[in-house]
Image (tube, rainbow, N blue to C red; front, side, top):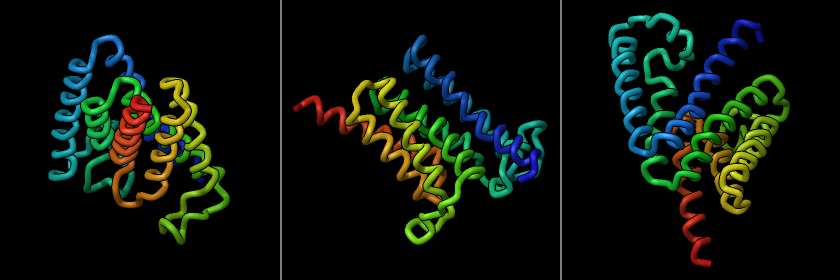
Length: 198
């Protein structure tokens, strides 16, 4: 893979590191503040994407962040914002943190490890894609570690890591920036609630 493409892939993935900022704003300023920030971001990028998609206007710098497949549709950052808004609205603070960071660092790890070191493409028959076992395994480990670090609960962490990895691996056309945090957060919250009754 050419070095330029490698750099662009790193740039695209690194955009999601804004999730750290999301967590920090939520932690220090509360749920309402971060929801307003995310809504402001969402409205802004929707306006920019309107001009990009409907009128073909290339937004300086930002156009390099889009893949070829996103030339006429929304970029992943919009779906990431929607996913973050969903889990922050529904889930406990710790579950939301975990789901958002799993969607970021799990996806980042799976994408880079799978793209540059993935050898065994074992999901072709099941999910009809070329994602690798190396990428998925590395995502699961990172996600599980994130869950343990934030939640301290191995059962909830395991459920969230499994759902995050499964959904990221299984989806081909649905944007994983939305589905990963939503599924990980939703089922993580259900698991946490059920465990509280035991």
